[in-house]
Image (cartoon, rainbow, N blue to C red; front, top):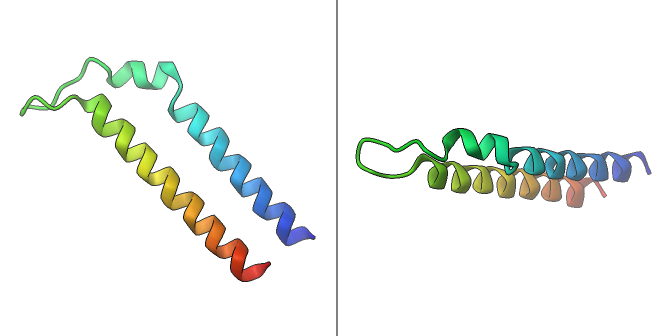
Length: 68
């Protein structure tokens, strides 16, 4: 039971982190920035955060499947 509770807490923590990182004030900081080659930093930021969240959820899911 404790393992399942920890599993759900980790998923909720990743969800809270996603809501924080995809919130306007954070995205607003990088929205007007561009790299030297013309790439907008906001696009790179969105894809990087999205990738990190997917990896975090995959690791949590894999650990939950082994333990549970």
